[in-house]
Image: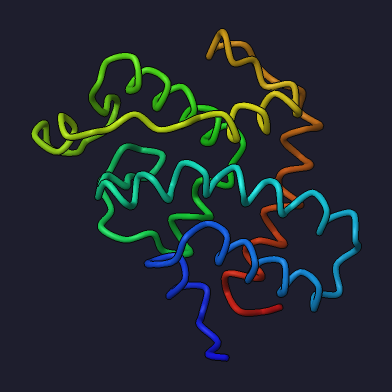
Length: 162
């Protein structure tokens, strides 16, 4: 079996391969099982939209800047709960309009956008009381703080420290 770095996996593999690598790394980590149980669904929710964006060559960061590859750093940027909520609304609006909106990607690239299934991300965000009807309604700070802990574990894995 050939082992690939997380960086390589993020650039080319499907969500199940990446999640499998996350799960293996989490099993090896010395973090409490609580963090492992929370972090894998979090990573799955993020991948459920980043992989389709990668496939369409439409990756961007939370500020809307274009990116050519799904890198560990870009993945970590989307681990922020507020950024992930904003991404969900951006993609929901894009699905409705039939083109990618609220980014700094070139118009011709945005026009090539194909709707992305938001079910996994939506269920995940809803489970942490993120309002999916009104973008401006805040969520409990405790949920934000919990995601900081999950992001720490994911960052360790992506940096190869697990």
